Length: 169
Image 1 (spheres, helix red, strand yellow):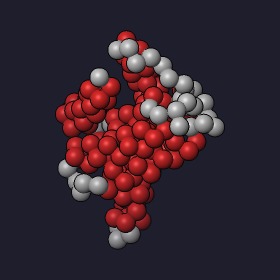
Image 2 (cartoon, helix red, strand yellow):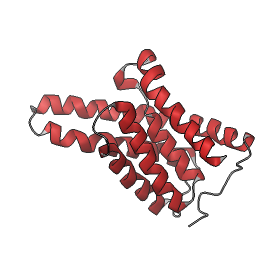
Image 3 (tube, helix red, strand yellow):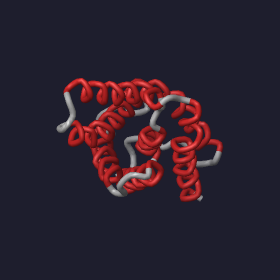
């Protein structure tokens, strides 16, 4: 049942990223549902499962984006490992901490691929590209706490309960 639950969350994130959000919001103001899903997984998955889940989330993002498969999965794997490393020291259930984590995930996963592309571009174009990354990271950080609250209620309703973020692993 947990596999069905997580698979449905991956599917909803992919559908939002490819179908619903592009129609409603411009690129610069579109939150990243995969980063929000990674932060949610960091709250509910065990440590060893979090690294696997982060790779699958990145792979789903790669498939939804239509770009090279594996690059985003690797970036999300690194982001998931970093979240797993700091999860025991921070109160990751606090809305501000989860918003900052989502902002960092988006910043990392969007800025790292932009660096090689920006090496051959003029400086104003690089600034504009990083302003876009900052805008997406900010919007994602703003919408993360209410979405996590709703997903937390949904997981309780489905019978998964609320696991403390510092347990398991």
